Image (cartoon, rainbow, N blue to C red; front, side, top):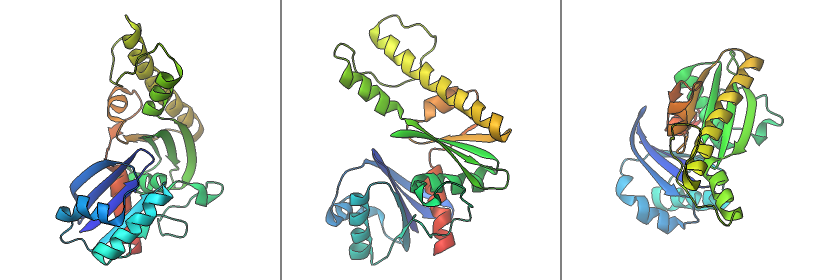
Length: 245
């Protein structure tokens, strides 16, 4: 089995693959853990692991995960980093600046949904990644994420309550909490759909897939997102692992 790990600024998602099948997954808060702490958390799930791959945007977590693989599994994990084989021509400037998670999304999206393709990943930031009809990574956009924006509003406005992000019907709030909830939902839904339409004006018609732990409600309500694939990043990591094993 292959252990895939996607380390984001807010959450770390781990998945075990048997062949092409995701057989186990866990989502944890991204925080500094020692190699021993990783072992205590994961040891009951790791029988049969023969390889691993990591995409990470948090260097301190990356180092301890490398130690964990070496000390506890006697393996050298593959890191999604410059020079790794992806099968993906990258037209970004410079190519090395594309985040590891965005590369994994692009590889997974290309394999599962074909090209041209727009991938919308809902995390700490909302990222849009665009693949051409030739399968090239063209670039994309980065927006503040849903929770990032909601928490910033709560932190900077003394009289506004903190609310949960959820799907809301209608456009007019009837109290303060309802106004914030509807503002967040309608605002992000409109931003996502408007951005996708603007991208399509540049590159033509595309398939569109949403991913990321915060993306389910927006993806289901969106007029432009056709698919929601919460595990797209992990599937992309598995494919990259196979290309580099």
